[in-house]
Length: 224
Image (cartoon, rainbow, N blue to C red; front, side, top):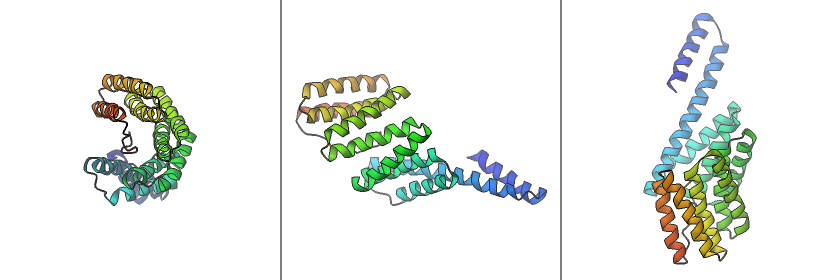
């Protein structure tokens, strides 16, 4: 960020002192890219605060939408896809509105696939799986979570794999296969412990307790 701001200063001087008017256009684009990155990063922090306090900040959505607009104008498909994911997360997790979230998450996945952004693809698929589960469509929910987990294994993102296995355990239990669901949770616990993902490990233990009591936790509570 600091480098791009300093470069904007240099480009300004090039325009003013050297008469290179195109330098200003370059500076605008670079500052727009910096602003998009900052808006996306700040939006994630605001969302993290929501997960901790469970209190909506109206500025969260505005930050993600600003990032998406800037990335779109810049032709940055990868950045736009990631921003759209977070817009979808806001609607699904903060507003509990899957009807609004799903089309945005689908578009995020589409753009991420175009650029080979497997991490964003995995996140979008995870939350599309949550939406399917909430709607009672266990088959499509399983397909999306399994594909998300596959992508995460390819990336070596083991805490993310463990998080998806929790979701798959709930689906497996809903299908009437409790013993298998608990075995899935065993794998999730191993992965979470091996990667030091203590928050995910706590979620595994909670899931094991909930499945044992035949009570499902609410899905879509975080974007892991």
